[in-house]
Image 1: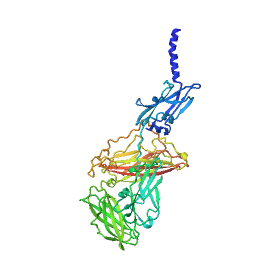
Image 2: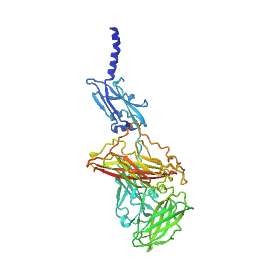
Image 3: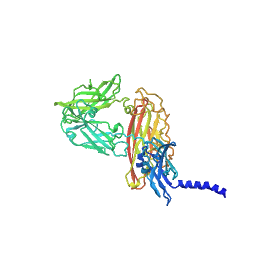
Image 4: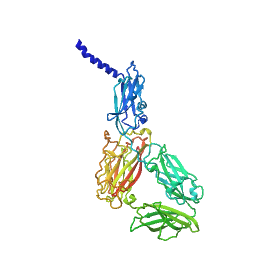
Length: 595
């Protein structure tokens, strides 16, 4: 009997300890897989943290403390253990919210990107365990900032000339929205400045107070009345410059260039004289000269106009210089409602990227009645890759073979594409949006990671280029093609990275003849999504530099009450062998309705 007692005593002792630890049971502890780096933001993150605990009926425990520990690579980085834990009143079943749990970690620093473990356990005031420790893993990843394109001005058109009677009416200013569309509301701030004598547009924006400042929310136009209230007298000119800035609800800029569009200029003309520079063109440097072509129209239906001088200013800031000699020579009178072409040349200037022309004209019946007209030209040399490369996107369309299809197709031609001139081509899906046009109950949850991405198989026929590569094994946002021609920069420039924002750096990332570009593998745990809806059968590719790229979308409904509208924006980028880049964004919309 003694031996039996000796053997059973440790067993009873262990059961007693286990029972003490299990006085509180953590029924569930859920933690979201990915959390913000700032712990205070967990409280506003849906499904961030939630814990449910139970105490057996009839059991009362005093001085309950909840200890929360945060670990990284097994090392403790933050805890409320040093304060004795969070006091908890006696309970039977209790749910602990994210606010309660994050409150216990209020003193923790902001977390760096990486993997973490969070553990919870109940103790009493004597530091005795009342529950088992339960731990969950999560990760912190700082979201990448979206690259927003700022607004682009539409009307009044650049260099628009208003007659006195027209500018006294309300003027409508229009522009394009920020792309892609932000989740938060956007405030567009319109500003208009009046130029003074001796100023260019940039100087006026920097030195003068705007005569108009107007904010509009989530719309891309504004109406301004009485923008001009009197005659233009020195030192003020009858010229104005305007731009639009995109702001979030905190007043912070959205997008590149501080969220600001490139400016446009408009002016007020005299009713008795109305000339316009129809077109200008400046050639590249040949024999130390750059040929100039300029066409001037007299828009007045009854009065002639005499052109007295044609001047130019280099890069918008240089000294004003007379263009002389010209053919025909000046002064010359242009009859009413007709045009005149002038030619001349300027000496080559290495630093010249743009050139501004100023035309002076008078009404012969009243020489004091003067009209000034300006126009710009960007030199068609390496400083303007789109003109030098000479490729345009044509016959580009967004189509769907059926309303219930799980794909849409972007197709078109790269007219003028030449593998001897273009080293690299990319087609990138930069914006995707789908909205319901029928019954709201038709909307589908975003359960398929392929939706809104390019998918395989795709078709392309770019002569002299390698096979297109998608930046993902099964789906991705960008297709890339590299020229099979092997050569270095052909002398049009010193090379660059292929980035439109930095075209003068050493050429290092422009691509090397179909090598070095490997599709990015998908993150671990991403399953291959099954096909959704009928597969589009790609039409046979015609001869020429064509492409046909499918995009995965939620399959459309067969119900007549359902329908949707899909909008995508595509960035087409081409690099020459000096890594100068031509970058064009085009947007497309398609509507699907049940047949």
